[in-house]
Image (cartoon, rainbow, N blue to C red; front, side, top):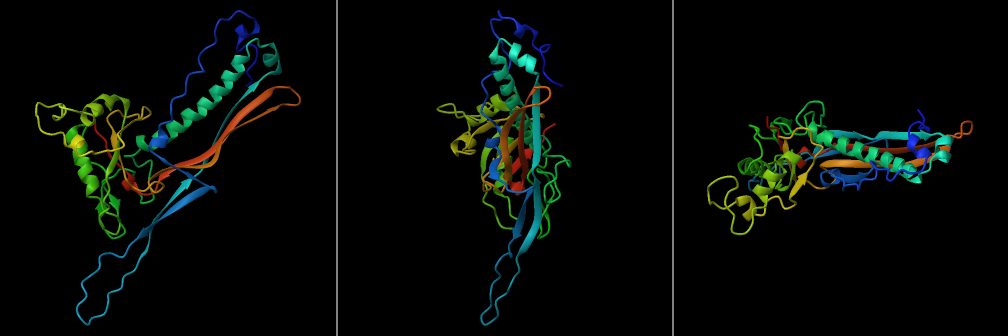
Length: 308
């Protein structure tokens, strides 16, 4: 449906002091702090896991070397999805409108629609991290107790007993990260890089991780024990507050998995705006189009807790 003179009747006469509502200062995007941006040149991209050959056995004197095999593990496909939205404005609305600012605000509003859509789409990965609706290439949710490994057995990247955000629960999660193994069974030597939380946890997280100076006692307790998280320089990239996370109790630790192998946002076609006039109506059409994919390859990129 076209925007016409009836949509902005006040714009047909002079005297309006201010038009407001869509020219807010855009905030810095949140998702690039969590997802690594990569390029894409096809309808989809695939990541194939490589599984090593295991430990080297002892070789008795005079005996032959033991030979092993190496092969591929699971394959993850991330599809590129197109997003498009536009507006139609009648010729009469454009020529009779006394306030050019409204036209600029509509374009800003269109860009805001894509910006908000991107944030929600990326946050959906976190919001569904513990559910079967978002499955990874290994057939498990992003955060799971049962990531099956090609060499047998399972691994976990979530707390066995989920807990709310606290100094103790963060320490337990960092221990779990430090004990992580790859799918060959080798130690990963991962570290936690940043804490990803909802706005409801930002003050608690700050008290836990940013206690400085003489006040280095354990957060939220009467103990004067050293705050180990602060003293040891844990989570060096700090706190990422994501107000698009729908469950205020869920929290995550992003790890040191190599960029591009963990959480990725792949850009196939960057946002572009197109405009033209319809020949028979003289209506002015503007629409935006972009295409990208979101997902993950190595689930060890994120460890989480789904607290009730």
